[in-house]
Length: 254
Image 1 (tube, rainbow, N blue to C red):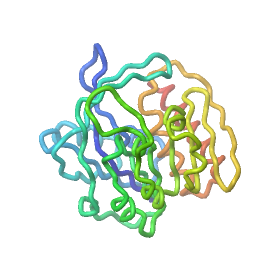
Image 2: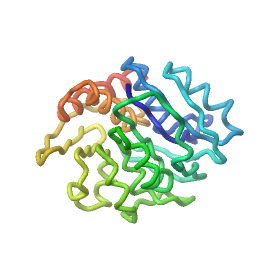
Image 3: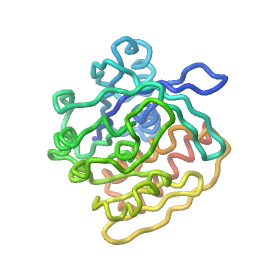
């Protein structure tokens, strides 16, 4: 069993009504395809609960709603793999007291949308008896409204509690040498080109193939599929290959 924890988001795309988003939403899409036991803890403003949580629950994984005061909101567009994003509202910060009781599980993926959401003490609580996977947005996305800004002004103590770190290639560039971060497993995704996985002093490139579809949420789905594969006993490169296949199937189905 794995757990998926994070803030819901509302995404604005030109010419379309507001869309549900965030790592918990796109991760839930991956879980529906993978059909494994899992639990989701999701947070948004109380005022948005009746609108957003049912859209998450329809994917079939049990959802625990965590009351919040704000819903993360983004406006963005794509030009191929290149994404332009504006932050319109920030989601809530999770404290250890905000974490709900969940059944025993070995892995938890933290679908952070910004650096402020999961401080070191909260990740420490999640890591007790578990392996934590963290989306790199929780390291490099500055918690500020306006044009999305990436920087390396993160608390290094956060990484003490992280087993797997997933970074998009632009996030990795901000950090400099991500292999110096000291996490046990590092995933660097490169959009339609594929990904590179680092583990135990080794690394391997896992290729992918371009698919003509909206790539929104592909990184979130990749992270969840990777954790599911690792939980099933796959070695890191094999888990990355399986995650690549899951993402490709999701994109092709759109």
